[in-house]
Amino acid sequence: MTTATLSRPRANPLTAGRLPRWAPWALLVTSMAVSAILFALVMLSEKSDELNLFGILLVGAVLYAVLIFTFAWLAEGHRRAVDRLMTTLITSAFILALFPLVSLLWTVIAGGLARMDSEFFSYSMRNVTGEGGGAVHAILGTLQITGLATLISVPVGLFTAIYLVEYGRGWLARAITFFIDVMTGIPSIVAGLFAFALFAMFFGPGVRMGFGGAVALSVLMIPVVVRSSEEMLKLVPNELREASFALGVPKWLTISKVVIPTAIAGITTGVMISISRVIGETAPLLIIAGFTTSMNYNMFNGPVMTLPVFVYNSYANPGTDVGAYLDRAWAGALTLILIVMLLNLGARIIARVFSPKLSR
Image (cartoon, rainbow, N blue to C red; front, side, top):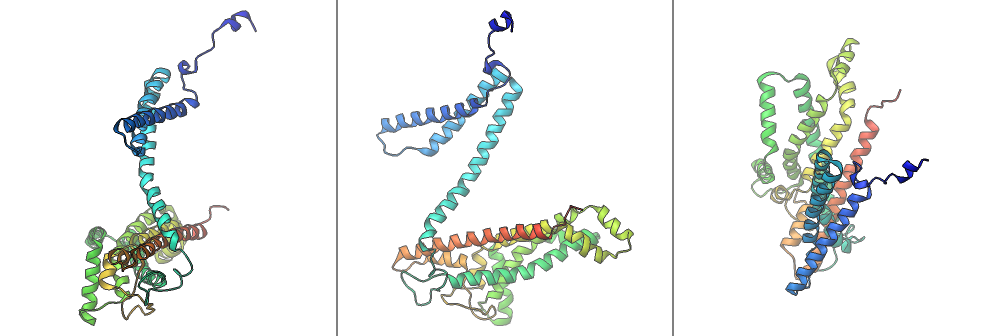
């Protein structure tokens, strides 16, 4: 090592063309600390006892964006400075979008854990006016109505998507696509009124039954199933169809043995999305499925309780013991979220098991 090398000054990491790895974290901590100090001074000047946490995070994020852009401009140039600024903005947007979801989950879990006991999952609300009782009748009703709606919607939606992708040409296909787009934007209350008017024609104006609720939910599910299945079927390469036709396989067998198995993962995901879309609907079930405090296993006779209606009724019509009703409502909401999570987990497992294997 020569004397000239020893005497050469060591390069400054802030001017060497790239910020050190610790610099963004140091700037973030500094920004939040400065923001916290500013809000603490404001709190002391106003003699307030509450510290504005949201304001600290917001001002700290803005200050961090300014600092990271400035330091990156000085050390790395304009191009990387803009890149770091956009990365900061995108990350901030993601955290901002994630915050309501985390807050919602935290609130529901904190409010619902108090009644997540064996009694809640084994008793109904029959003859219960205060503490105690459960939502087993609502859980069973939700599973029954949603299951019937799925049995109605999946075949209709899947066959419609197959027709549009594999067979549909001309004015009929365009008309079906137009009406599917219209059905996608139908409010849930309109679906409930449709089901009520349909069954009132046969059973009278005061009809209340679980099957009617399933029909109302299927009106909301079918467009989602059609759209998701249609897009998944379009992603199947035409080379697979042509290879099957070249072997002399008829078209219907090609669709059932080649096209659908190839797209089954996406189709299953679309079905689960449609179920998640309707399982929490309240308005159509209030109209046609009705309200009851007892178990009802018959979907074609009498009102059937569901979890969304159970939660709504517990909040809207609490009895003398308001706290007990609110606890049951939070527990019902948490149960509904858990059901949706289990359905999505099951969809991922089904998609992994039935999707085509790429290994030879």
